[in-house]
Length: 272
Image (cartoon, rainbow, N blue to C red; front, side, top):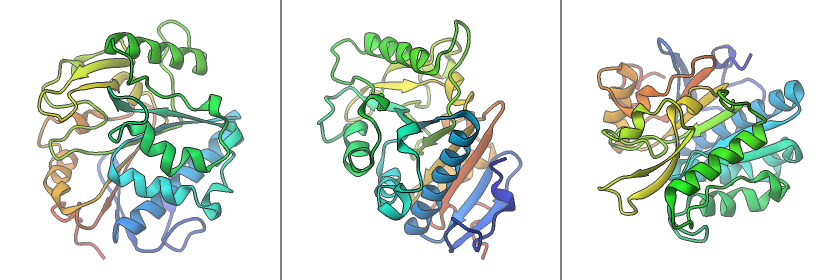
């Protein structure tokens, strides 16, 4: 079992500079700074990949967008980390995407490609991106859902089960492109949906939905920065109904990685 509660900062494959705290349901790891967070995340990804390939023959990874994952991807692309992953047995998917071409500056695919996917020997056919350039976002969402069904080999009524899903956290409590007040928060059938976020610079987006996120074997939130402290406290204290708090794998692990600045207002934020 992928059990971080049994790890210490001296354990093989882990970085120094973090504290481990068990919350009621998720596991919260407070890292000393963004660099320690990125190294901890990279090692967790490697552990998950190794376990998945050993037990199931392949590693199904769902990538997040945003600045915090960027640091993790850049580190994971370095030989000291990348050589420990069976990239030929790895499939990379995306949790959400803005409706933009893949070479757009705001494309989650572009960020992941530049920092990680173009730097490791993952087969191009194993990279499943959301087609943000499509004119019809609903059709693009349906096409990605069909890709999930095909690659995972799921039957009608079954959900794809990712080995690992990486997620970020917005200051409003959104994750992936699941924003407060969005009708897609109530989705129970579709695995992928097109959403419109009026307040966003690029309002039209594609996102995985809660059914597929909560079917994952493991979910890791990556959160850094003092501007996230209030929302981290709200989500982890269950005092607010926020999209990020609705991510609770039904048969899997939920891990939060936060740097000290992001965890500062949480009761354990000042731990050693």
